[in-house]
Length: 383
Length: 122
Image 1 (spheres, rainbow over the protein chains, first blue to last red):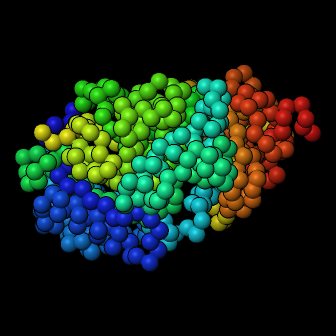
Image 2 (tube, rainbow over the protein chains, first blue to last red):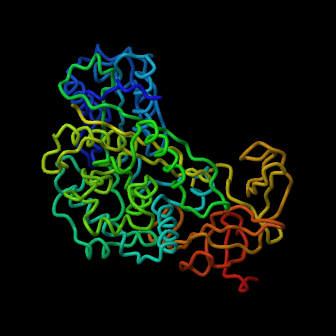
């Protein structure tokens, strides 16, 4: 049972985009300084650090800490694919909830532009990576199965990109800002895999995000956000005994645990940040979380129900499709957006009256499993 | 691709070689001494040559040594008495096919597993 007294007292992020000329420590430094200042704490007030990264260089966790005034505290590195940052958050809040530490920092950082010159190259030691299955194709396979099962036209997926790229145009930290595309531009962009076009795929981005997690009793800021629940599930076997796209059962399991622990239902969620690395990702996740009926998530985006100003906005930050997807940082960037939303500090992207927010990150790519890791966190607004 | 142990499913005599767990009945295209799902005892089994497409997708971007356009599919292989494992394979000729399409093994070219529409193979 989650201790109700765990709070996020400060968040921070870098700007997101391609930053090959920056040191990776500098990306993390920007996020950490903002988070510590937001929480009104100094580096010496931090007892331990969890750092999520996927392709970070050897020793990056200690290098980041040394560059941010945090050398000497225990540092734990997390690699959980795209969910690395949210798994860091999960471990950080558990450390506070169980009394192991008083006040800790969760950090995520990634600098993909210095590792890959193009798309992420699949892992050659993995059967599916060795067969040429890059992540867009993995999602495209799910998309084609989903569209077939519900008798939907492939064009319906494009509405997710239109919605999220409009929201991203209001986010000054997003990788892809500027004028948002319309549905014809999304569907007419370059074909990538299956029904997915370029504008339905997240950009390769660099960036960092951080959150200070502590007991409510020690929080110094005026508007701490309560961790109502945080569930972490790893994927089980994914084989011929299921017809569901990979990740669906894993998201369902994490959602069930998070809602049960918090005593809430999907209808209680005012705003959500979900893993939309590809448009089909948001569709499958929205439905697996129980936020809408199966087969309806894309149409809800087209109708505006999940858009800013709609009944249950999803990805008001612009999501991964706009903000970008620095793998290890993504989960904590999602967390930062929900914290800002619950505090009423999201500017033009603000969801009015939001008191309960949901963060979900899905990490995947390993052959034969139903996703590497999924975290679902429910956060409650101050006051 | 860098030189690493080839992890892809392997064909022998036109079938995918693998194992089935004697305890949980899980089929696997990975030839391994104990069931990868429950660590139960396994018996060798060959799967195919027919299978059912779970989903397929054209890939329009270069990925490592693969040049566009190529078509990937998850295929649920037939087993001797019950369904076999789901494997990732290439489709020949290229082009997406609906889930449920029956396909058959067209060899592994020493690396990738290939399928063609059922009834059109060698």
